[in-house]
Length: 579
Image (cartoon, rainbow, N blue to C red; front, side, top):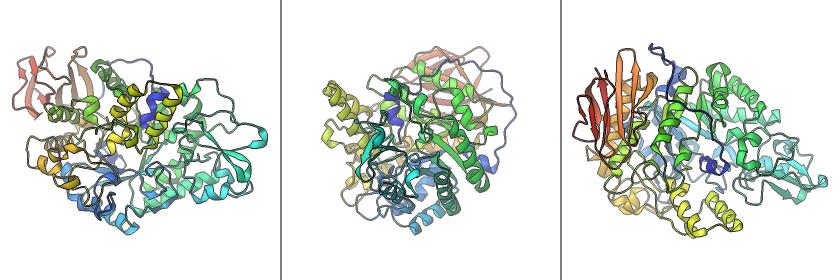
């Protein structure tokens, strides 16, 4: 949920980086049933924006059921879906009022089970988004806890009695006034890291932890295959509530995240849920160092299975863009660090970030198709588990929202209020917000050129991007050179070539300002990936002895290779065998 806030907090300024790695073993690791997530490709669905079946303007389970064949056609192997629990929807479902009930907007439990079974029949697994750093203030636990200090649910949350004076200041990511809110009934304050309607759960309470494990078991027994733990790095708190130094929010993780006890809780969760139910888990955020991430996901830790970090996502937060040299450096660093142990997620976008092509490619009509194809080639040719966000298989783009009145997202509105209070240049602020807001990632899926892009027959909950008439599934399905069909080819290539999953990654042409090139090698299987990240031709000479062979993927008709010379057209993406 909270990827978009990480830049503000400067969480991931990591130390050291090199593209050089020790020589790796060339034997092929074999995936067990428990390791399906390593060889898979995950597709993220924001359910309220995917497909509406009943005309209320809000995506639902039956809409997804209608498009199960489409999901299968993509070649993806798992779906991660954002929360659909009962919720007042203050934060689009990340404020949960009942963890075992479904928001009627999405459908019924029977609809969910039909959807899950339909995915299973097509070989698609399901990853549930679990929001347990906090609940909604409408959850029964909180409603009871706020009534009395003697409530059995009181210690499910964090409280500060007013007779002790003002609580030590805590920064809130969504509330400009801070992280404590007063409750008159019990003359006390409760803690909320996010919105005031999202009180933090007290993970230091073993009863609360058992409640969470029971919830996870409930869904595992329904057939869920994995869990994405939202904002989980913040779950453990120092309940002595010490005073933090001024400006601590700039190093938020150091004070708020990844406290030592969190590892104990994850080990407990692994023993209670992950191991007996043979499911996997990935937690949003992996700390501020590579060691933090290893401590969460190395196999012998028996905690989580996948590191999901934000360092490379944070490179393109403003219209100023990013440097390819930094892009290469960050991805190479993380690959090198996890070459021998642990596993990482590979992603460039999600529901908390602007669209992939706007941030890392080129959304202009001339280059939108080829630059999105290039980025999808990158995602699906790296070591780690690729996460694709709905619409990125089409090259869906940002939507223009230049005035704050158009925004409904609590994150955007909170940032606007903070900027106003600080006296910032609001014209410049809105320029950046229009580019970077997570509202850009939540526009309805563009299915066809009919009214509302085929998303709904009613009034959509969020405005459809006006470019849907030319950018949609139906049009791209019929075009063999579309972004959609290129994505399908890449997913198929990854499935059939485990060298793209487990093979060693070695960067070449490291200093080239336009080209990102690397090899993937596993035993006798050797592939070369060539990617032009620029809008102009890019030339280079390949290292001596590297002999390119058969082209497996190419988003242009022409080959870029002539002997050891390479000439890539704008945003050209090529994968070749190495002889």
